[in-house]
Amino acid sequence: MAKPKLKTHTIDRDWCKGCSICVEFCPKDVLEIDDMDKAVAARKDDCIACKLCELRCPDLAVEVRTDKD
Image (tube, rainbow, N blue to C red; front, side):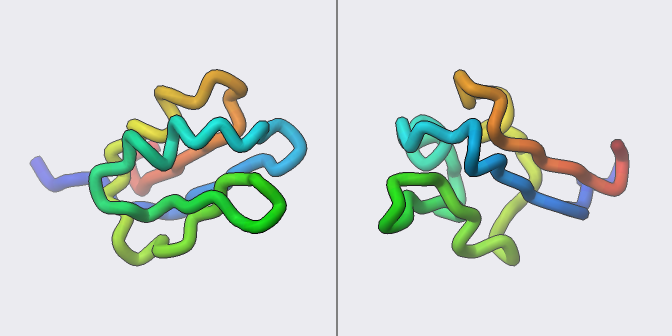
């Protein structure tokens, strides 16, 4: 079975409180906290669509969509 491929990686900036939990759980260092204290997907090309950021976000601000969704 093939691994899912990333379609979109979305962070709702209104919901994100900048807690950086998603940043800490990302195994590929895709996410960063920007100068507005919000999470951003700085390196989307490195995303392996593991969805750990989406699963761990306490505010449901992160959505990772794949070709399997």
